[in-house]
Image 1: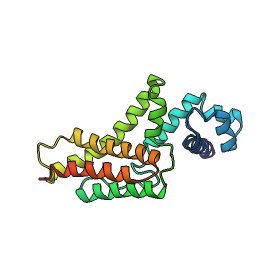
Image 2 (image 1 turned 180 degrees about the vertical axis):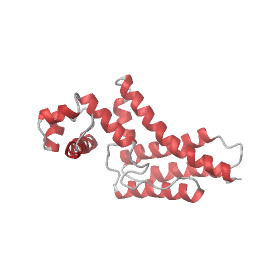
Image 3 (image 1 turned 120 degrees about the horizontal axis):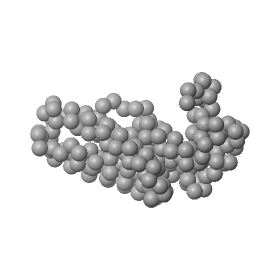
Image 4 (image 1 turned 135 degrees about the vertical axis):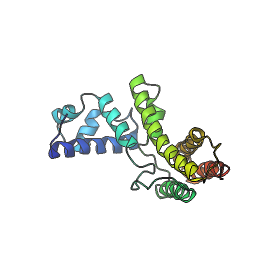
Length: 198
């Protein structure tokens, strides 16, 4: 669907409203009517862009997948050095501290609610996580090619460890309302990466 500038703005407003409501209420507690009211659009407008709640949720997943690895931050440069990875981990922890552990509409929270629900949504979530893992993998590959990491470093495993630390740390931090799980998990993952320093 090709959208006018006004159409793009309306669609984005609907997505923004859906994202905020899901953060507050979860997917099950958010109806399309809630989203319609929050976005200030008519029912026909909402269904013009999203023909079902599932289509809207899938669009939210895509939107969150395209967001930076650290929510609320501009997209950081390539994560292709120990310093860059440390800055990324610090930014994620700082975001969690600033957010006071409040729930957000993240891929982690969406996966917790939606992964068992239907195969298409699960596939969308898998693609989103794989996109983030590939960003980490690309940075680690540049480090290995430059000689910062040993040739035997398993980049698939290291990038997955970093992603799992981010996602697990996020979930525990939101549950416990403290940034300490995020700090601990990312510190452990970075120490694992450092173990392969050349």
